[in-house]
Structures are given as C-alpha cells and as structure tokens.
Length: 256
Image (cartoon, rainbow, N blue to C red):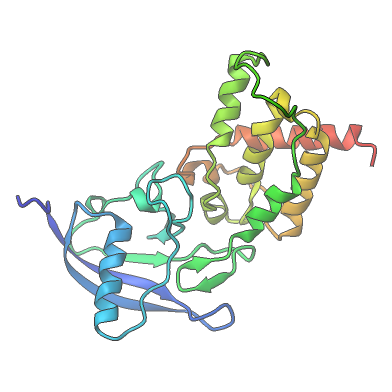
C-alpha cells in the first residue's frame, strides 16, 4: 500500500445555489484517485482546485479551524449531518469512511432559520442572536480569585462542562424534522444555570433565550433525540429537559 493509503473513485452529487433567491440544483462531479488518508474538506479543496483550473466557479462551503472545535463545517453528507462517523465534525471526517465507487450527496443544512447564502454555506446568525439574548453575567471584577474561592459540586461542574462543549454547528437543527434548536439553546442555558456564577441573571436568561429561539422560526422539540444522535460533541437531550424546567421556574418567579 502506498503512503496515500487506498485510492477511491467517487461520484459527488453537490448542491449548487448562486444566492438566497435563486433556485438550487444538484451538480455531478466524478473524482478519481482520492486518498483515504485525506479529510472530507481536503477532498472538496481538491475538487475546487480542479474546477478553478477548468475556469469554473469553486463550490462555496464553510470551514475555519478544521480541528473540530469551531463548528463551522456544516454539511449534510448522504443525508446525515457531518456524515457517517459518530461524534465527528465534517472537518475531522476522513475519506476512509467511504467505499470505492460510492455516490456521495453533499447538501447544506435545511432550515428556514438557516437560509442558504451560496452553495453549501448557510447563514447561522440566528444562533448568535439567541446567545446575545441571554445577556451578560454579573461577576466580581478585580484580581482573579483563587480557584477554590467558589465551591461547586463535582456533578454540577461536570454537567456544566458537558453543556459548554456545544460548538454551535447546527447539526441538531439539521437532524430534527421540525428544525428545532432546543438542544443548542438548552446547552447554552444549562452551562450557566448549573454554576453559581450564572445565578444572578438566571431567570431573564431562560426567558429571553427561549423567546428568541421561537422568534427565529425554529420548530418545537419532537422528543425523538435525533439531535443528540447527530451532535458531534454528544450533547445530551437531558439539557432540553433542564431548559424546560428553567423556563417553567422563570415563568413563575419572573417579575415582568
């Protein structure tokens, strides 16, 4: 076997769309000699290089860190958010997950709250507005406190850390038949609701983030856990139950 590993020949069916207002279509590309050692995005880079050399427009897709931590690489691959590998972002997906001769469909996220910008790139600023609606947290300023100054139960610290690993990629929305953002919003609410530092604005945060989620046009939770199955960081749907409890509590105690 060469240093490139095995070589694949693939048929790629890729969504092309020039703008938000223009109609999209599927474009077919035949690729040969793809090393199983390269990543999925590197495969798209190779295709774009071939398109540019031929004088054609390259395929637009989102990417940034390519280390699985920024959440930018948002693609449906054969109908699965981020592709066939569990708990793996598209940028960390390698071509060894595919078979020689396979046909691979590549599409953007599908949600009215994530409008297509061009080709495979969608506008996910609705997520930014949900986070912004949560506001600030009131904390003591000045010199940094000692690490043990605020005791936190180990279980709460672990749950808060698990929720904080959400990278906001939108796979949960893409996997849900209602395009619900409940897993994302609940993770952002949970990571602060579980910690003493997040208690001052706890009530307003829950009310405002849920209201903003609804305003953005995301659907309601279907309780089918497809979001958890598709999440590359394996965020638990237990956070959705916690968000619902936080929202109920906030609705009772709110003075607004």
